[in-house]
Image (cartoon, rainbow, N blue to C red; front, side, top):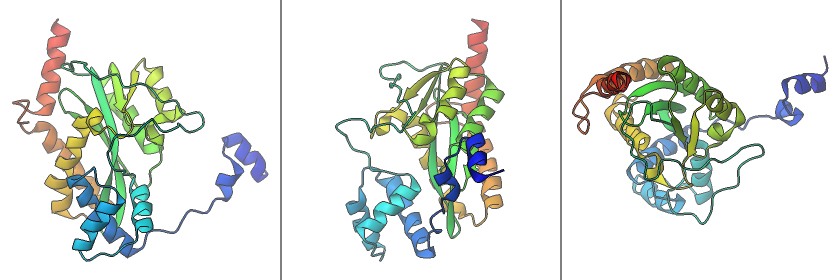
Amino acid sequence: MSITRQCALLEVPRSSYYHKPLSEPSLEDERIMQAMDRIYMEEPTYGSRRIIDELEKLDYRPSRDRVRRLMRLMGIEPIYPKPRLSTPGKGHKIYPYLLRKLKIERSNQVWCTDITYIPLGDSHVYLCVVMDWSSRYVISWRLSNSLDKAFCIECLEEAIQKEGSPEIFNTDQGSQFTSEAFTDVLTSHGIKISMDGKGRALDNVMIERLWRTVKYDDIYIRGYETMIELYLGLEAFFAKYNKRKHQTLGMSPEQNYRENLMLQNAA
């Protein structure tokens, strides 16, 4: 079967078939990205210029183009008010933000998701999580070595399989979440789709807080070197996170999630 016919059957452009991926980041790039990750966790409003200022304090001297390239690779951008939303890609629909002034107080009322960069030895991977907003209960998570949509869809499908469907699902405007493959899973289960405004950090604040907890309570302390170490470490961490007392809730996320469900079912 010709390459043209194969691509047509799989609905893959021939340019994608012939595409050669960029070379892997150098060891120096990985070290800079790990430093940038810590800077971004502390100051998510910093753009490339201010990140460079912080890197220079750590004796790194990257150019601005290099920092911008690494920020794109990490999937991060500074948080600041923008004049308008970015134009969605072909076939990607941007949905309105549904959580403004909404009182979120029930389990499965709102779920949220996001992706974050995870340093791994001299390399890096990405972590996707689906979390119940009200209880902070982490329902599912996935690791991937690339920013594709497949692992995000797997994470979503696992969450729905485990806990049913939420009323609203909130994401940012990343291409992984605006893709038809991802939104089709939501619409097929009758779930309303909500998307953050571009550059609005507080629109998905619960999962942003989770990233700080994951990184400062586990990732930065453990310094994982291999994927299996990271997977086992995160498996233990999320099990502990879901069962330990949350200061705001006065109980563990999982306990809060289950008790709210019981009350809802009783009502």
